[in-house]
Amino acid sequence: MKYMSSNEELRKKVIEVLKDIYDPEIPINIYDLGLVYRVEVRNGSVELDITLTSMGCPLALVLPRHIEENVKSKIPEVKEVKVNLVFNPPWTPLKMTEEGRKRFKELYGYDIVEEWTKSYGRK
Image (cartoon, rainbow, N blue to C red; front, side):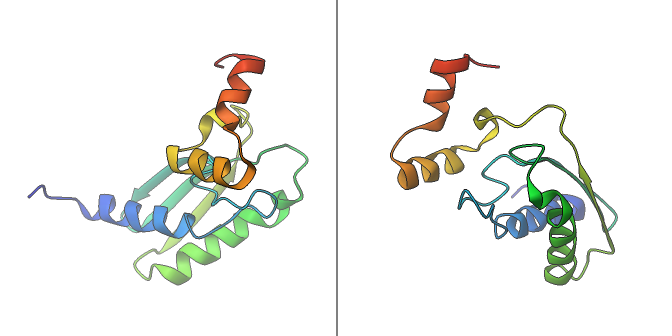
């Protein structure tokens, strides 16, 4: 059995919490939607880089706080959470996980990554 550090274990717990937070317009969790660019855990402190599907998204004002509150309340060993809202690189459907892509196809009847690639290529 492979030994996992406490930072790795905590990172997995953080990702599970992120998978319970959903985009209000696209009913897919923010992790599988590809909005989480970085999850870093060090000694009980968590730092995240997240983005939005568009720069004008009204969630910019509430999503970082919502993430912080959820991580702190659901994972007692987390001492501190910092959420950075970033827009570089911009979000595209290519950032979605396989699970997010599958869920999108179930919801909307088409593969958004295939459509994106037809229109824009792989970027």
